[in-house]
Length: 134
Image (cartoon, rainbow, N blue to C red; front, side):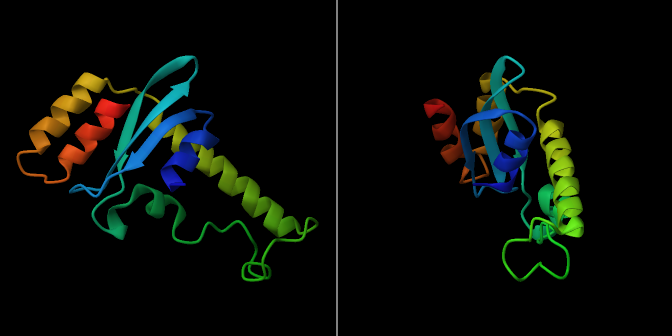
């Protein structure tokens, strides 16, 4: 499961379909149900790790465990530091996902955007195919 999909779900969305694409900026699209509405949300994970919003927010390590338990497998239930880190991570993950759920995009606008991109982006057709299926 994608980090972005996980964030959308943490924010309370039901993800009906999700796909990431190797397009120029590393696009992802999701069809979601959220607050009684169904629609598309999208983002890009960037063409490099420095451009990825998720990695910028959370880094490579999710920091859900304290230094003592980070490399030892599951945290003990009584570790206050691990519990605190996990709660903070969950709060930030929810807020991150909510940022993508503010505005749904119409299928027509997405088709238009990726049709225009197909003039120079060889991977745009893959996105258009996904939109046709979803």
